[in-house]
Structure formats: C-alpha cells, structure tokens
Length: 541
Image 1 (cartoon, rainbow, N blue to C red):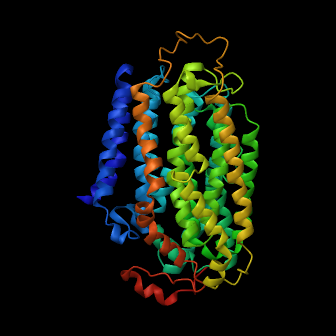
Image 2: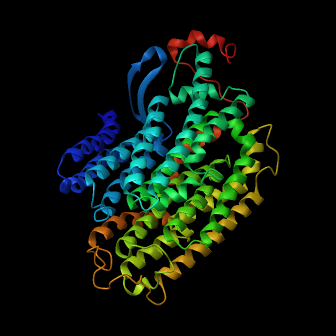
Image 3: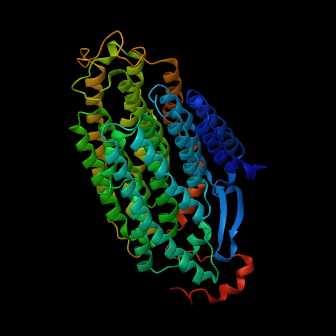
C-alpha cells in the first residue's frame, strides 16, 4: 500500500483539476482548495511512514513497464531530499489557493485547474526515478506557468510569459541532449538500454573527464536557467513581477528549486569529476549573481521586482553550497531550497495582499503602512528578517552553512584526491565575497521595509480610505492570516531547531559526497545482465 502514496499525491490534483474545469465558476476556488488539501494527505503519509534511518534509499518505490525493449519504465521513488521538497510543494499548494481567493475574479476555472495541474507536474519531478518521468514532468511545468503568467499577469504579462517559456524551454532541450548522451553511453556500457536514474549515474561516473565536461555543460544549460544562475537570470525578474501572486509564490517556492534539485540529483550525481574541476568557475558565477542582483535590488522602487532580484541573489548561495563539494555546503544548499521557499514565498504573498488593497507596488506611493495595517506590517517585518538571515530564523542557518562549505571547499577537493583540485582553488576568499552579499541584502531589505512599513502614512492619491474597490478591510483578513501562519511557523521552528531537517538529509548528502572520490565507483548492472558486465569499458563511446 505504501507504493500507492506517491501516485495518489500526484493524481488527486489532476482529478480535481478536471472537476474544476467543468463545474460552475463560483465553486472553482473551493474545489481547488479541497483538491490541494486532499492531495497533501498522501504527502503526510509519506512524511510519517518514511524510514529516516535509511534516508538515502529510495522508498515507496513503484514502476510500470512502458517500452521495455528501450528501457522505458515509469518509475517513482523518493529519498529524504525529494521527500522534503515534496512536502514543501504540498504546503504551498493550498496557501496559493488561499492567497488567490479574492485576487482572481475572472476565469477562475482556468486559473485553478492549471494551478492544480502544475502541482502534479512539480511533484512528479521530485518523485521521478526514471529519466522519462523526470523530463516529462520537468518540461510540463512550463505550460501551466506560461498560462498563469500570460493570462492572469500584469501589464507586460505576454512578454514575460514568452520570455519565461523561451529561456527555460531552450535550456531544457540542451539539457536533454546531455541526458540522452548519458543514456547512450550507459547502453553501450551495460549492453542494454536503461533510463533508471541510479543506473545512469553509475555509468556516467565512468566517463572520461572530457566527456563529463561536455555533459556538465549540457545539463547546466537547462538547470542553471531554471535556478537561475548568472548570466541566465534575465527572464526571472520580469516573470516574477508580472505573474499573479500565486504564480510568484510557486515560482519562488518550488519552480526555481527544480533547477537546484536538477543540479543536485543529476549534475553532482552524474559528472562529479567535471563539477570538481569547474567548481571555481561555477562558484564565481554564483558570487557574481549574489552581489550583482543585490546591488540591483538597492535601486528598485517596485517592491515585487526587488524581491524578485533578491531571489536571484539568494539562490546564488544555494548553488555555491552545491559546488562546494563537501557535506557542510551541500547540507546548507538543500536546507536553503526549503527555507527560501518559505520566506521568499511568504514575501510574495505579503506583496500580493498589499497590491490588492492599493493597486500599486511603488515605494514612492506607499509608506508608513504600520499605522493602518499593523498585522500585515508585523508579518512583513518578520519575513524580511527571515530573508535577511537573522540568527534564530531559517535563513541564517542555510546561508551560514553554504558559506562555511565554500570556506572549506579547497581542502575537501584535495582530500577527495581529485587531480584538478589545488589548495586555494576554492576557499576563504569565495566565502568572503559571497558574505558581502549578506550585507547588501540586509541593507536593501531593511531600507525597503523601513520605507513601506514605518514613518508617515503615504497612500496613492486615487486610493480611498473607506473603500478602494477591492472590498477588503484595511488589514489582513482571517483567510490571509491563515495562509501566512504555516510559513511563519516554518521560518521560526527551522531557524531555532534545524536539526530534524539536517538529520534527515545527512545520509543522502554523504552518498553524494562519496561520488567525488577520485576512484569513481563502477556501475553495478542488474543481475540478469551480469554477462554484459564482462565487457565494461570496451564499448564506451
């Protein structure tokens, strides 16, 4: 029965999406909320039934033959890293519905049905154990988000949706080329076709450094765009700014993590020698993104665009932790994937609630909202401090571990015996320059919250104090507070007590680090193909 939980979590949102599409519009949002909540029930089952003592193993596994002669199977299974990202996705789903309750007043069936389908696609990315399932779900996330931005976004929504689609789709095609090459190599290596991610990883680690380098370049083209890593980030601020509130929350909370998860699962797992060799270059790009995007935030007047650029900056820490090639940096990066989804997703919700009331995000037209919206202002200050990295809140632990991992990185590579690693290739200077990004982030975020929350009340000239046409009270409603409380609790609990998360991911992190040993592990074919193992290395392309 346990193997049913993952398919159930994926199928329930699809079933409710079909129901929403054909029912009366006035029932769409309630049905969508019910679908998201029921879809979270199997995820709760996964969390409670998961064997955390064996967290590196892929549990709740299930597969169905599709085209066996070409190694095509539909396979699902999760380790603790995938489990936590699935839990984050399930948490944000109903929160996005609650956050859109009064913001989406037209084409509600279209909006909520595609939001539910997007939920299924994102869950499929994290649960996939077969390359076909992964890539189908990875690509299919583009369509719902394209519609959510293009139909329900702001003034420049069409340009934003097209730019989002072209950037990510083009990168994904190049990544597919790299993954197909690995599958072809594995077919020659094993003597049969397989698209199982574990088998492909074992075969890919036997490739030469040159082959791994080309595969690294191909996969990064898709995953780095999704993160996004500098200089492939230019689509994100426009997409965030023009997207509806729910679209921005999902984009920041989950969709960007598809890129970092892809780097963790495929890049680190498939081509560790190439990662270790090119780690300095990837670290430099991460640090440029951290500082450059932070400086751009400093001059923004649109609050939503400021938070959008801050995502580019923050996720630079996430990539820096991934390429640090040690347990500290990798643990911090995975933790950052979760914590960024909580705090930045919450900030986009806060901005959406403010926009519903004032119909502007311009800091020149807004100020001193604490006097009129004390509850909103309290939440806003809290989530800004979490995003800044205040000790005691969730952002601090993640950033600190990523920086410590970068500080220790050179010695980690040398200890692993990688021939391309030299003392000082990565290390303290990388941590120092990345750390300046934390200072810049504190400045632009605190300046923003100081202007919007404190001081004399400033409202748009056309805003009426009694009723702005949105039929919302001046401060947050019970529905809006309900959407924010789980995020606030997550920021607080995981800031004060991150050990449960760190303990859960310790085993898969250690497995990932072991793949960076100089003597790459040899692939282990399935027993029925043991005879083909005698020819290992003779048929590699």
